[in-house]
Length: 459
Ligand code: SF4
Image 1 (cartoon, protein in one colour):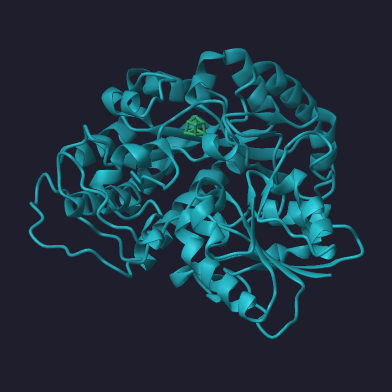
Image 2: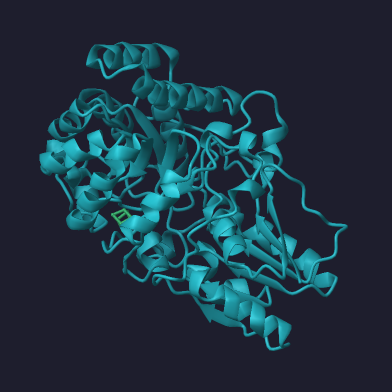
């Protein structure tokens, strides 16, 4: 069979890789789900991977199966693609977060869906298709043996990604944060790959730098200790996503530094304890963020923090306060989102009657799709833009670079936050993100922007 695997893209992002400047490369690294499917596909089939940020859809080629993975904001584009191929009689299967959390919605547009990670279901799906008995739903599994040891990374155009060497050691998260779709996707379960398997894969990377895409690499201390110990001799540099409670474990932090970690993404989310509690995210009180970050910095590890604005306890003062706290706690980089009740999450059920915008393309964490409690939706959007613009203003970036130089962690480690800061500044300029602090300038008119350039990742 000829199989097409598609990572859809829409709006400005479609074909962005062709642009000379700001082409999204710094933020583009993970095609892991599609690469994994390609790795699991028996050799008798021919696989084509299309990342719409880079390639156009091969509309003139004939395929026997099209498989699409999509987050909620990309579901409309995924459905357009599905309709196109289905018109020619080609069966379309959809997986990923949106289809898993909203199976009924997805099944209106495609022939079949895969719930959860597709690993354990993919080969069965192909066999069923060949036998003419494709089912409407498949349930993925994550056990050992479901995930191929070697991924066909050569299928990606390496120069178009900051690194094609993204991998994972663990899948899923056992916490139950209300706004999060990860726990729903993996059914609150975690899966850990065998450490020797992960190490052998990382050892095969020619480049020194790679990325762990795990949702929380350090959730299981015993596993993390084994993994980091085995990583030390490889002398690689890597980044990962972890939780802030890692700072309580200085021994593990030391080991993580020795193992080559140069940067972590941590979802601090907010500096309001009340907001954290409202989402059942009770890892650490924001009162301890400053000390925690200091301990992480001590190991030469930089911190990109996920920050969310728009919680029910957030009023118009939250923007200035957030900016002040980001500076005070010495966060190096931020990925700022507007609180988004993704369909299928606990937050969506809780906020359902306050949702004002049902256009799925706007569920990209950059649009206020609901009525906030203590401000207007326009103020929330304006204030969020203002925080981004301020945080990535050139004088603040320069100030942080001086801070990093004083930390004396070597030039290699410094490249990571400096390059990401410049990439974020590029986005701010490209997308003309300005905003204003609603606490100073009361927003009188704004108007919901239907085709607003979102400028930030969907993840
Ligand atoms: S937000 Fe982070 S800690 Fe909470 S459930 Fe999601 S992945 Fe786990």
